[in-house]
Length: 250
Image (cartoon, rainbow, N blue to C red; front, side, top):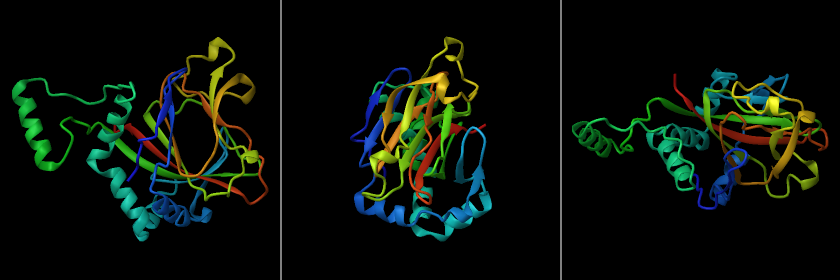
């Protein structure tokens, strides 16, 4: 369902990349049209200013919405299938990012047994049960919404952020791009615990503009600082995105 054939990465100060045309164009527009109403979402405030609908934010409404919409029900099944995490790890390995999250068998006998079971079940020949995947509907208000520089919680391992806007809906002058940041003060360089910084505490190394049908992909590290600076769009304009997180299951 998701294609990363056009994904290109940068590796400093942490692995982050962009995949364009990540969904088939017609399917993408269908998903954009079926994006949930913000009335279903929970307003998160503080170091972030966004609306969220996920397994963790308004979980009951999330489940009801996903199960009632065939498009999102199919997408949910795709993200939850066993092969999804393996596919993402394989895509990263092909781009020189080997996180070594697969747990390989320790003996030859167990290796053959695991391969056989995997083939019968259509699974990758690795134990990925320690990992889980979920997705979140996210909205940031266009008139001043923001996400302060942060590195993501230690539980998260890989994040994929898919823009959910139509063609011509989001002019470049609105802003809203994902900034790749570096701490100005070296004392803030190690930030695995995800302490949020102020915008004045970081320098911008690169910005991925917020454009339709693209996916920003990055790996959680001790310095994976990223942010969305306050957006300058008219009142009522919404920055809609879909965030897929691959996390430690326990």
